[in-house]
Image 1 (cartoon, helix red, strand yellow):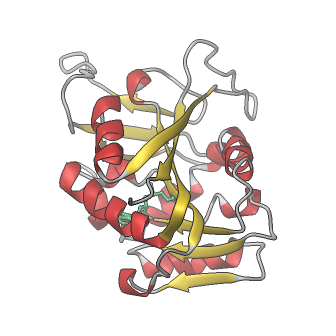
Image 2 (tube, rainbow, N blue to C red; image 1 turned 180 degrees about the horizontal axis):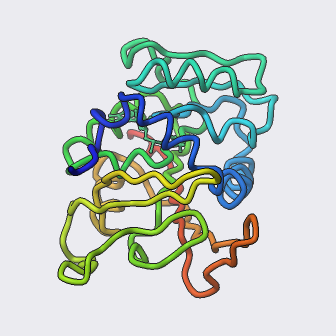
Length: 240
Ligand SMILES: C[S@@+](CC[C@H](N)C(=O)[O-])C[C@H]1O[C@@H](n2cnc3c(N)ncnc32)[C@H](O)[C@@H]1O
């Protein structure tokens, strides 16, 4: 049977198993992401779709942190991982402070969206939460290299249905290489142009892109040829 995707999966107990299996990200991505975030010298950061807050221990504890996730149980777990004395969990979208945050992080949330409308809706919510000139930071698996083997994960593309980059929003079966056991679930493929054009359409200007190289971890050798992660930084366009 196919494992679920989207909110159905992320609202289930299986979500916590997936979070626990994602230990490589903490070593292989989060220090890079924290450095990219720090480059914008923010004081207030909103982690939108925070899950269980895996990124939070890597962040500067002097940041004021806002947390939102439709799975409130996850957001509450996330709050316990925050090193910041000013950490606020938003129980619903309507209560998120408007025109307030310097940075909003959207980390591995895009792949939960089956199409552009869902992403646009989230981007409008994020745009409202950002102050003028604030920065949206999207972190994702690199869409161009989904069929490669990485230290932290691989995607199962069967020989009779190989990776087709051009097939927008196809479901792909990702396998996270956990310390104790592997966990599989389905995500949606976003091409680079669908991602960037939707961000631009929502009123952001692209500021920078970072391709994060794979790294050795726990006795496993990095893929030296392809980057597993992509980070896109964009600024809230000022309305004139
Ligand atoms: C793959 S997890 C990523 C969690 C965390 N950001 C991380 O990087 O470890 C995806 C998260 O996105 C959340 N999510 C799904 N749909 C969302 C939406 N429309 N708005 C905000 N978060 C959403 C899920 O509940 C889940 O916690």
